[in-house]
Image 1: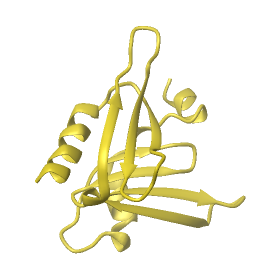
Image 2: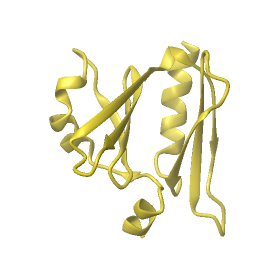
Image 3: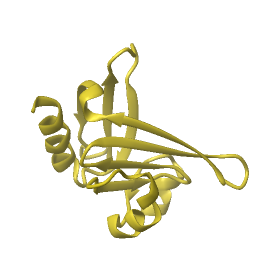
Length: 125
């Protein structure tokens, strides 16, 4: 089911340790990746200080766009959990200065409660 979810655009869990080694150059001192999810070529990372969207571009995927959103820039967010017949979950982020939310779909509810706590703590503290 994981490959199918990835192909249809739903994020699946990725090992944080493997990602941390590959992306240590973009993390600031003391920042750690808490959760990592992968799409076909793209990734979304939840760190101790921000959300990072990695968009691989071009045929080879060598060119990458990194969209970094500090938690303090998130004005609100919503999480939609999966149901009996719909195994997809969704997170919406409203960013200060943007009228439309950033929407990301996930397969299942894995880690959604923990992600919600992480974002809420960062926004409310």
